[in-house]
Image (cartoon, rainbow, N blue to C red; front, side, top):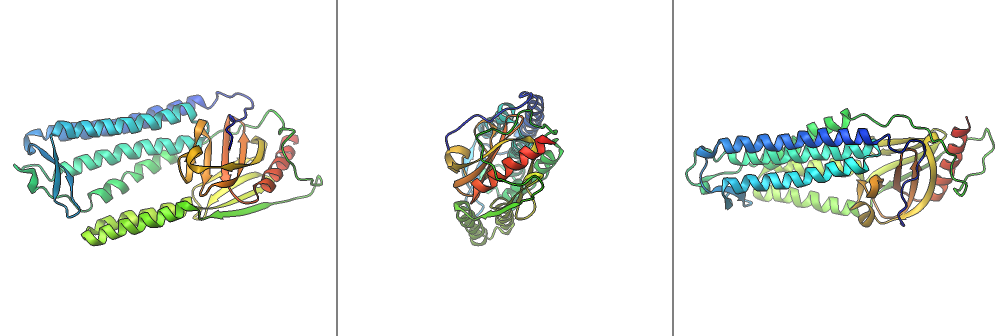
Length: 335
């Protein structure tokens, strides 16, 4: 798809304070978690072996060692780089509330994940004189993946959505329409599922489940279960266009999004490459804050809306959906 900056209508900078606040407090919270974890493990310096165990083999025995300072430095560098990247995405491209929620939750998750992994991996080494004697809890990785999902989900839920912002310019004249009588009603409904991401998901679930069984680290079975739920959420969607606007809902009912008809500037059919435009499959944030629901590549529905926001959904018969949405937008703006 040839990139075009999202169309604008009305005040185009109204979203920036919301994006900046979300980037600052989510990034700040994530960095605070990292710093607390670093302070905790550094306070254990006299109780830890030197060097410490920093990596474990599949059987739970240490197979990599590091100085405590080096271990903490890797934690901080990795975490800071990831958090700054997410915060920058929110700061510069956080036009849509969905983008702000995704990247803010991701910042908090990565901060909590690295903090738990660091503290947990060193907890069992306190009091040892030889790090080779350390044992790694089989549930540590699973807990470090799962527990941070709670604060991450809370962040996503607590961030406010976008306030109503009706378009102040009509739908573009060159956008396709459906010829409907003034009182005639119409609904366009499609479902999208599958795609290459499902194959990746099945392989990831099978591999993580096999590792858990072969190593008898049974707590790791929580990871493939979580992956199964995530892929069910992000690789099947129902897309509906009616008089109210565009609705997209996951096969499990969440996540979901809604674009009111009176906020539509133009809808059109485009072709999408998930990797070059969104970095992969699923519910993604692409260049310049464009939100993509892309379980596969190819034909897609592009909706440009007020406030410099836009949404892409890969779906069959996208041209028909776009034409009906433009017609409904004309009606909504004429009221």
